[in-house]
Length: 211
Length: 246
Image (tube, rainbow over all chains, first blue to last red; front, side):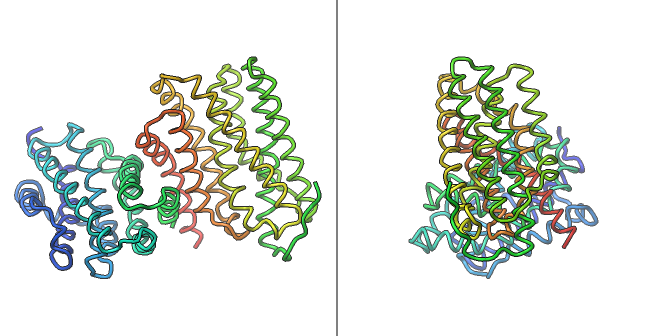
């Protein structure tokens, strides 16, 4: 497919809004987390794929606002590492990987998805290192993770219907599958790199998602 | 079994929750006994052991009935029947098809994961109910024993055939997780009412079942992805139900 259609433009608008918010959080609180290629990715999205008004009035608009509000945290670099770096970047990895490998994007969209995938991987690695450095004790680290991540995780639920309705058939993104991939990607990082007990992470994620 | 004394008086809300939870435990254990008996007919090499499992499950039902009686709780059979009907349907279909592998995954892994994820945390509050600690501790130990055997059986049965086991797990999971996971979501508020956490039990069941699939040979990432994906609609349904009644 040579040009992005309406569905793909909506998706890019959504991703662009989250990426812009993330870039702003890094810039104000934790510049060391920003991946080198992020600005270029954002520029490519903005100039080639995104129509800023495309989400207005859609069912994606309210969930996006809720997510971005939950992703502000307390404005600290530590929250940026946790909310943006650990959670949203990893969600980005899942989405960009699914899109890049799915063969359903426009040619330009596929190129941008591959670049954005690498940038999100880079940022999530930086965030993990920052969390380890700032919170050397895994027990303290888990307490912070559990206490700070709940609003953001809970806000993801609002995307369920809208994501399935707009992107499942056309782009192969189903909310349940995205969340399954997200948890499957997040767990090894939490256990192997952050030293959390797997059962406690699963219980926390389940509780946050159940509301 | 000599009942332990209750340490605090139960509230009306906890009595109602207990009525449903014990109803589900009693009639669920009876169904488990029936399922292991069906397995014993389909797997003659292990018939004696599987019949013994069935006897143990029947004994759990009897212990739990005694706990109900000792605490003045009438087990809610109508609730249990509603919750267990879907599972019974799945079990009967596998038994009719002679599919002992599927029966063992649904009973030995999925149902046992639900039992373990609820009996284990219940021990922490069990002293509030006469005779509950002994009954649930012994039942829990025996459920672990069943699960250990099912792991060994499936590992041997699917030795060097991880792909075939993945296919089986995926086939059984679609209905099994929907059914048993759905039941867990339906009792989550009752678990909260007796001082447990429905969310903790749901997380423990998801993680416990995923771990069992891994121990038979499914890659950790694949097992997690599949189980979480199947739980997500149940989690969302629970959340939206709560939001609607709030």
